Image 1 (cartoon, rainbow over the protein chains, first blue to last red):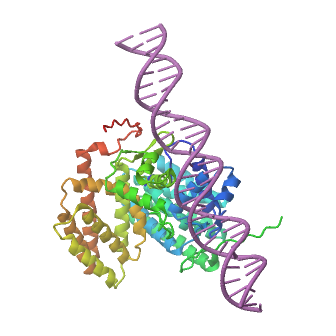
Image 2 (tube, each protein chain N blue to C red; image 1 turned 90 degrees about the horizontal axis):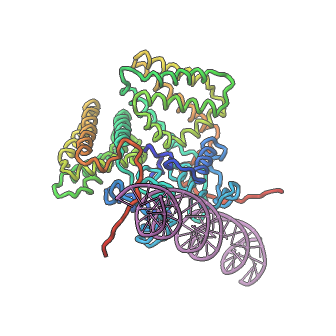
Length: 241
Length: 241
DNA sequence: CGACAGCTGCTTGTATACAAGTACTGTACG
DNA sequence: CGTACAGTACTTGTATACAAGCAGCTGTCG
């Protein structure tokens, strides 16, 4: 599980580079949900052979971010509402549980990190991805406080669909400021040792994220998987050049 | 996440077969923690080329069940106590949270399944793997009751190290009967609608599993990863033939 | 005009060849 | 006897060639 995001025991390989790159592109929606991928095309673009590209796609498929249909094609997974809900449930369960494991004395180093993180969240000139990175680090930091920081990597791996949904949300003017406020509330409750309050604030925060997503889905449903069998369609690319 | 165990959208490929087969062998300890794997050897044994074997190993590596050291070798991961603890934490968080989502009316089909499952757990002539399969199905069934059955696949994926540790435990005379009793207690509390009692029983059950593991670790530490950097060692096989 | 067969171009799956690197091993030398 | 060094046998990483299969277009025939 600590390995869930594909750490390859150190050594630098082109597969690893490509995997991370493609993963980032999928998560940031640079590769849109539903988009067709081609091992050959990607290989050509990235200047490598099919092998590392193919192996990267296999890894992404295992994470559910990509679907591979043998002899047909590979596609960026559409955001699956069921998986979003599952990820949300998972995340809420884990983050709330972590509150029960907070030690008497919080690790001052981590507390410092979090304080710093929160300060930066307040900046008004933050780009979308920057805020996202801070958000991610903040929640991971909370887990670290409870001594189960590594579990976050598992949650993160399962969170792909949720993250993409959230990004769709932030694209459509969800104010980061509100989220930052909620983060602050959670943090304050924790350092005050007020567990019940922390739990409430955490729950409210996570639920807010979720309701945002439902709003988005109504707004741009084409990026979400329809209930039925997600039939793949071969692309018919028409290019002017 | 629903895809975490590598479902390849239907079609039958030799990679899928091999992946499942190797995974099973690792989980059942047929391939011992620390054992060296060789893409070439496996390919020869399985009668295929390196490609599907290699791709399977990559998938297993992503799950943390195998470690691949470029240009050095591939090894079945030793059971990592930290990952066992993390998986246990994750599992406990998720299973307890699922109790909060039980509907008023439980799905009678699932309840039936569970009841049947429990009956079979009572049989005295159960093999180890049979009991394990029932255990797995039982816990997944509980999640299904809460409407978050799919989350179990994520937990299952992260649970590899935990499962291997548990199997070590059952190898060393942990009585399945005791576990079956605990399962029964949980189930009864749930159908009675006694949530608090269910929570207590669940917690006791999961903690019991965990303390078993700690006992095992003291008993046969060579299968566990030592704290330090898990340095790989090239095998030197001497074969008589 | 409609239906159907076959062709074409794409897809991924598998096999194989080669490249790069590591660790052991035997040997020569101090 | 110990040590340095080159050789060797193995590892995985990458590139490439070929096999198998699906989809759509197109020409032909009814």
